[in-house]
Image 1 (cartoon, rainbow over the protein chains, first blue to last red):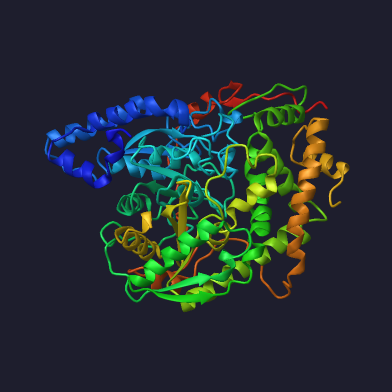
Image 2 (tube, rainbow over the protein chains, first blue to last red):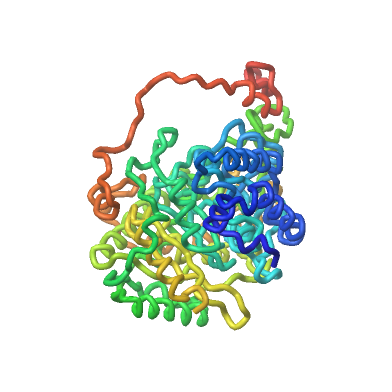
Length: 481
Length: 111
């Protein structure tokens, strides 16, 4: 482990303000660590050194001039490669966008830089964020820094691995069915999916528009909250962003959690869960009880339908969203005799196997004769799953579950069986479908030293409470329980 | 068997994908397995359930869990005002075949 791994948002702010270190020195330190570790881990696809050092120099000039620094001044951050960065290649982990350079920044990226953050580069991910292991990237898999023969989870595997390996202080990922929380669990770092609409998606390259969200990875809960405070809030460039005021999550992080009712749904501890995961998460819940929370047993009867519902809704939306990759306006073009021929050859060569599989599934679910049986029915079941949560949150303040049924699996273990891969998201897709916020926090390790994640879910726009629970859990030693 | 080879080829055509025969066979088997799994949705009674077509928020719930109250009414639409957007050249630079100010594509009229 290099010294780079010890920096946090808070320690960087203190050191910069005390002039003990410059933003340029911090960025240099992180790039040195990336140069050393990334060839093995493959977390980054593109490094934005020029942009990063220009930003670091701006921070250092501001420091020298005695100007007020932003809350993330000099903080090195990695950005998942489905989020647009002006002038920095953005591939979505796909060959179809291998040379694509966006003409504008995503709002989340612009807000990070405005707060002083230094964007180090773009992180590897499953192609168009479709996957649970990062093995669907066209640019090779990411290795889990904790166990190099294992996957980092997905689809934001590069972001999770970059933070876990000290190649960034924090990272942005995206979550559609678990793609922030599950890799956070696999790599042993806190990872938050905000409420749908809480963080602007302007500049996020769409996968499934009723589900996609941007959220942070960090090494501790306070840093997670600090990133959230900067990226959250209404944006007039995103019609789905909610006009709800977002509090200063970082400031409220230490608020007491005593008396909060935490729901434990029995459906999340049934068939298919690894016994060590179950044991540690139950120990985590016991710790929250010890901290003054009241445990309430819950039944959420539609949980078992969530994966089926998700894979209809998400693929149907993807089949529409990914229609734009046709070789006309950007990205790959494979010449063809006719326009249709060009579309088909371009898409055949540009998309990988999982993307094609999902486009086929989504197209099938929307096609004439199957729409009612699949898509419409899935939307109705989605309403039932959301209702399970609405009813639960009348009885409890938060819900605590495992993040994933197993720890990180071996590279190649599930690649030949798409359905088994989909089931890795069994505990995360529910919150995605309901639109609620959730965080995965580390909750000890298995005998093999593999990280285990515990998920805390709250009602819409309750990120403050979710973060307070996570912080109290962290402070009481829950991460290493 | 839920999905036939003909179904796969028809769906591929709708999705503008040109599959190799091997891909068609692979996807047939995998989609069949996935659709069989998804078939569990047919067991649920969804009579009188309104489909959730988009994410929408109950503002009372938002108010209850956030310190300040949200603005009333949704969706939040901005004023329909023209704003300069001078990125046409930057956008065309990304085009595989541009003839400014156009994207050039194979002929579509004569088929």
